[in-house]
Image (cartoon, rainbow, N blue to C red):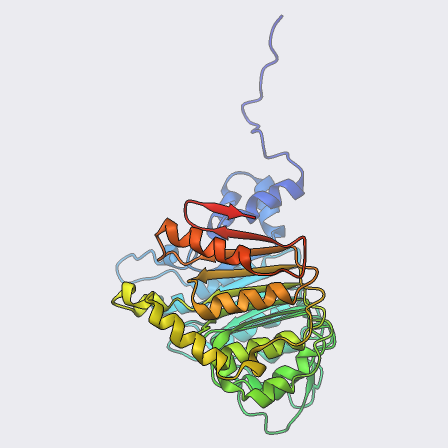
Length: 421
């Protein structure tokens, strides 16, 4: 039986449904996605309707195609790509730190034109990164008031709140700020972000000046080296959030009285602490006060500070003298370092970079005795501990600690082993 002849003028994917072809373009860098227009008119139509554009490290260096001293006018290219859209641009990413290598230089007016177009054409996700750019650009006010943006990430960008608009980012559910400095709020206005659910700060300054009302806020994250965060600023958000992620050094900014006066975080279910230094009593006391203010806490996740990074003699660090000294500092004021109320909802504890010091062991012992519904304790040891005997010793010690929960399982994880009880 003769086989049907395949039409050589047709390929296997050009007649796929539009949704499938658009998914293919999503997995390509923007420059390569644009080049699919060379395949056929089918792909040209797909490209013109494609609504996810990323002008980033994959885009700009490839456009520096020099012929003598002439350069590709990338500003015009981006403008043309935007204006050719026949459907809304749902997701737009711009990393302008790479533009210092190109000519002509980007102007604020170019940025204003692009973002005005996006704000009027249904953009939902915007990632704007200035990085180490020599020129300080401002976020256009049309983005602050854009009614369609749901996710916004800003890195190193300057922006001011409009004085006559107490409601900003009206539909934004996720805000990620990196490397920003929030200027002094001279008018004392508390801006409403009515739909905000996730707020993330990384290496930002002047967070106290970011005065907002966010009744739907569920997750708050504060990381990186930043200036002081006032306890009163955090206290306002502790009343509503479900997830708190922050670095341990923030406890240095607050007195014991300030932390102890935090409001009851009735909704808080997850606490994640990074770079926590157990050897410093101030941080440990702060953590314990926070736990007491979180009656519905379900998960506690701690990553310890990596002491050994800058420590020349690792063996000296693990000497018993260090543990005794740290333990004595903890026990000088025992009443302030003891959890008085049971953590009735706590089910999971995770501790990473565990060294097995006296303070660490005392903390685990305390948590085991105060968590009646605890199900799992996962301890990941420091990668600097290579002695298997140390692991067995730690496990045996932990097994001797009384547990308020009969279901509590202790798991010790390492590079090449896993111990569970």
